[in-house]
Image 1 (cartoon, rainbow, N blue to C red):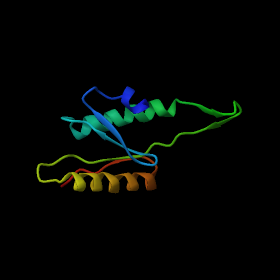
Image 2: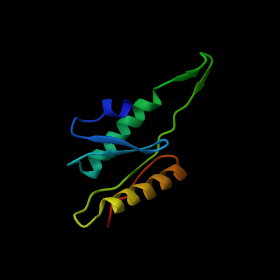
Image 3: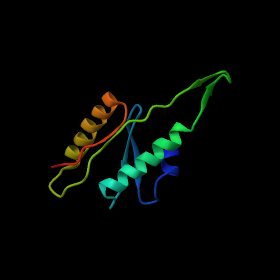
Image 4: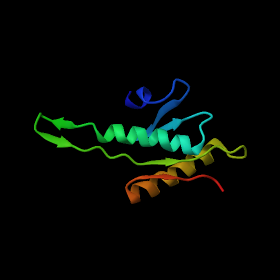
Length: 100
């Protein structure tokens, strides 16, 4: 719900599994997609979660980007984004992974 509230109507969000989600941002250049994800990360950083009204929990947000290419299968696009996601998790931030 949080992601849906922070993307355009034509964008698509879906759960891949566990705590992993995919965003499809049609017609969005890589630079603009990076800006969208930066805005989402900044909003998540401002959320304070409390457990039983006492302790707080921090949210972590890492993401990988992949840009659609005409010769790229959907499975390949997801794989590229997944590689970028795991690289970002290792570094603790966002990493784009455009195809060369």
